[in-house]
Image (cartoon, rainbow, N blue to C red; front, side, top):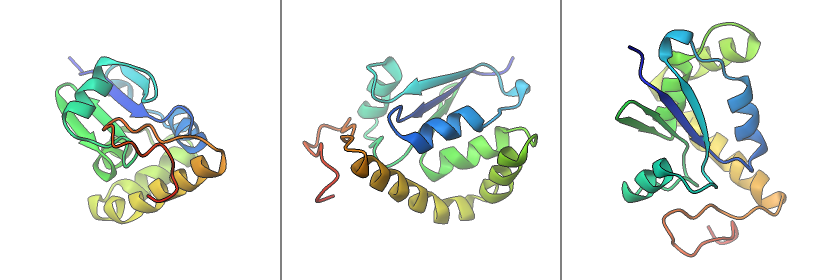
Length: 136
């Protein structure tokens, strides 16, 4: 039986929202659950307890296995269908763990700049007190 795939992303990030709407996961992957990291949830409590800074990387959880940042986008690319230009492109770009590790920080930094420009605060799930993007 396929395991549930949970994708934890920033619901206020326009890039994260677009990605989650466009990515198509193969039916064989199991049930897909999109979780806004800005909402209180059991998985966000788990992420925080594990010491994962959601402002620095998205999380994908499949069954009991947690993938973070570049590893998360790599796993999603492998689970995605090859239908449509977006899914083909993300598959071919992120199917390599090495390429994912190189490109993911660029995507994360673009997200951070966009949130700063939109006046959105950090999620700060690790309670560092850094609600602003300035001085990061």
